[in-house]
Amino acid sequence: MHHMTLAEIARGLADKKFSSEELTQTLLARIAQLDPQLNSFISLTEELALSQAKAADARRANGESGALLGAPIAHKDLFCTQGIRTSCGSKMLDNFKAPYDATVVAKLAAAGAVTLGKTNMDEFAMGSANESSYYGAVKNPWNLEHVPGGSSGGSAAAVAARLLPAATATDTGGSIRQPAAFTNLTGLKPTYGRVSRWGMIAYASSLDQGGPLARTAEDCAILLQGMAGFDPNDSTSIDEPVPDYSASLNGSLQGLRIGVPKEYFSAGLDPRIAELIQNSVKELEKLGAVIKEISLPNMQHAIPAYYVIAPAEASSNLSRFDGVRFGYRCENPDNLMDLYKRSRGEGFGAEVQRRIMVGAYALSAGYYDAYYLKAQKIRRLVKNDFMAAFNEVDIILGPTTPNPAWKLGAKSSDPVAEYLEDVYTITANLAGLPGLSMPAGFVDGLPVGVQLLAPYFQEGRLLNVAHQYQLNTDWHTRTPTGF
Image (cartoon, rainbow, N blue to C red; front, side):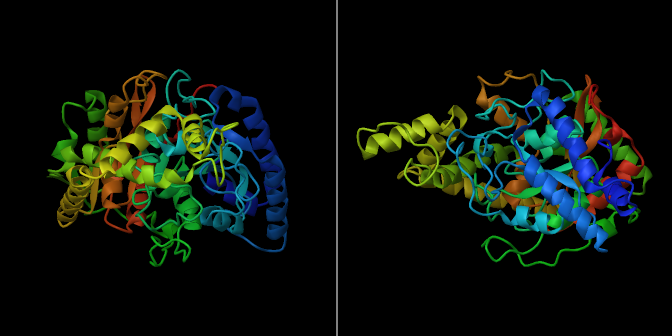
């Protein structure tokens, strides 16, 4: 049962081959057995899961149907879940039980999805390795000595290890796509505003976006269908009709114009990954796509711009965690200032403190124009590059990451080296574009992903290309040894 995709589970439940309750019990037992190796979950919700599974079975017995009805999933632990710990991977929120459900959680529950638990993540979603979590690092099921990517590494590791078929995740600078690449999954970051951020604890509000992590593009289409849509509670949510993503999967790629930016193939890219990306290009050419070299001239400025904008927004968003209203509070403070200082100093980890300090500096008087304002101007240039490129091509293709997953601890003492691993993913967040990573092969036994980018609200096009590619390759079917 644990090897089934979301689509296969939907068919099995519809054909009464098994019940949601049976499937849920099987996966909960598998998590209890295997997750101690991975540390991919922060909280398990067995009681909730079994009650939701029984309710889904009853709904099916009454004639109801739906691709997510009775399907087991998990939520990244920054989506608020009513009455359940929502820690954001932090000591600061270790004792926080959300009083309401995030819109994404509520929408998926209404569709009948079964919540198995909350997955591990980098503290406040800050990291590319899932090593900054207060609950310990997550391990990559393909090699337990390597990172699974971050910040959605818990969701990625759990799905890759077949502990569940799919999970929610979030992407601020690549935190869906990079873990997908490192763990042989398909991960989709939707257009900014396509999925509600209400009830999603913020890192950088103008960059954060929720999306699905699953094994196939078909499964991502199913999960995104349940997540997407306008939400009046979210001022950045866009009132745009949600198409039937599954209906677009089988379209022909004949004549599809795919752009390959020359800037992607620089000295920083592992040549073995470059070769796998070229193999993917050839595969899509066989399916009728037309390949064209393009240029994204301002890509070189994206990382410095991102690492000014994101920490600046983080410093603002995290100012609310002060030891007064909710979250961690230090013991026996001498006065109010001591309460603030010690609660934040003890409650935030090193990476979060680093980004708060960078952000506060960039926003301070005398430096705002020199750093933050300039970074926003670069952001506009990056967006303009994409708009020009999409006048020539329908899709942009390249590597998801410059290297395969590194060993645990290998970059812990050099945060800048870790930041540079986001070079191919952060541009989509700066521009607000949809992006998808799909499996493209292996280097030294570790998975490699190919990234696709599309114009705004063209998630269906990304899913179509990925699905057609997956019908003609088998990378996405590979399973890590031992799982």
